[in-house]
Length: 115
Length: 113
Image (cartoon, rainbow over all chains, first blue to last red; front, side, top):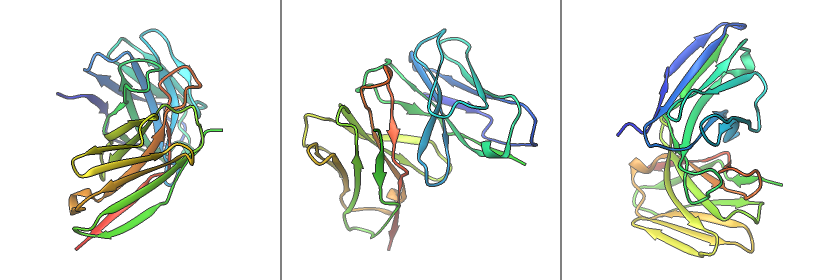
């Protein structure tokens, strides 16, 4: 039972390079999320997708784009990476949008460094 | 506003009880969560509590909720070295129209012999 799978696990980029982070879930969840985790700041929502075919901005969307490719997959793209985007990125999924008793399940993260 | 606050560090002796505290601000939150993050891993859901409950117990874990004071705590009985991790409190406010989670900065629990 894989749950939420993120690739790659680690990546180093140069400033200005582009990169797509991949995420797939096998739990038949409708909603998917991308967060970034920075020291001392908890997790902040970048983008979310309430259902297949829809995406919306979260708290910190600038510098990112997303694609909900199908129900299983939700990718995060950095078009022109900046050092401020050095972070650990987590993908999550949940069964229903707006249902607080449907907890989010997280992947293991992608550790991204921008030089 | 939406904000979740936690103390950053807690150190306990193996076998003692650990209590991790959290305060939140959004009274509309119907569910509150505790997640655990081990080094190099993602967040693992430990437990959650519905806002009309005062307490929830699950084996070594006890969650206490004081809705009036917007205070949530996680008690770990007989703390083991495997409990060393970062613990995140999260609230789920009704605003936003989606399954929104607001996380605290996390409490790093260190268990020593």
